[in-house]
Length: 604
Image (cartoon, rainbow, N blue to C red):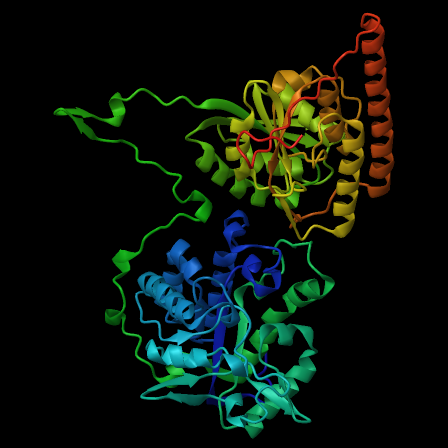
């Protein structure tokens, strides 16, 4: 390819790169909590490799802003970037915006991130960019803290509109003075139009606007400014095949996914035209490794807070009257056998997410329960069956079953229950809209005399997060109607997330095989006098794929089921009265419903 017109390799410009995975971006912060990051398919390593190859082709050294969270869990990625001559800088640890932190918490976040980054990279960390958002004029106190903590520069300012209209120097690389301390500010480049600052140098802006327009504005900067052009992008922006998170707004989808395939060739064009380097190289900073922690100090930490405190010592040593007992001589700990049934229908996209979640569940619950898993592919039309075999097929304690045609979620749960070899069976949603770790609290509630424990987001101590209003209205409305018909006054009748006795469920004659069957099971147990317990929990919106529920059909179905249950209850009451001796009244038995949030108490 010929050298592009307007090529200017005489001046040095700055390129920085945000090293984060696709699910860690601020646009998803309301949907995905940091505590759930471990569940997602990790694609950051392949995207970093793609980025490093791009930089190597153009002989460019860049600044990589990395979070402490990634450095702690994947130090080899950070080490690889540093070994190829690129700068490692801090993006904080807790993935917060500056407005979520006090000066004290900000200082602690800086220290924690710097420690793990320097351990991972073997180099000094002298630069910072805020993890979420940008510094507004009211946030510039953070520069004072950064200067006090020995940081050489910050790159958290993005001039937008008239934020810094009265401080025009903040549009370009400048020095911030704080008493006897000083720090460089390296703002993202923008163009001024009719008195407004418009960013032209970020990956999102480059993707969203026509390249001809953006390239012309960059060219104007090069001709009119003596300061370096400061550009950035995220490694996930080079990944057009990343999993699509569905339950976000249209604007967020547009912002995150639009033109992902475009950025690579645009960067190629800019890198051919202009000369770029890292911030540290531009400012001539010394990143000598002798100022950082030794590489040998790198620790491979657990991937999620859900695992903290789970792993116990393999052996214990205690001295009693001079005697010594080791774990090898202790009797084996009894673990209750439990089967977890997971119905799957067209869930290919979510199976990696499910696999990471269940691995954490297995480790968390493994000390107390002997877990086995039954996956039931309910006649999926996508690659669910092939993915189930690839991801779970060789794991111990796993059984894979398949329906020839789609029969419904209840039919899949019953198929898995029949296959179970344990009396205690759990059913969970494949999309993990309920956290399966809650089973640790739910299984012990299946005490003698209790046949079923159900998760209850609509309980006063339960909660919902980002769930569509139509789904809440339907579920709460259905629960209200079921309370009028059934004896046990539950808050939630429609949850698939349950713990139950295998014998109790298989003795039922369930007619409805879809979502309605989930409520029918509770209805039949209630009418035969079984005891049911609710466990307050949180229901979240699914992050991948689509709900399989047909709303109108489900509403009509619930009304039909309610009619059948009411008819059966009235018929049972009539038979009881007919069978009672004349003049005697038969006491109507109402099973006790335990409120699991108040030990020993009842709510009905």
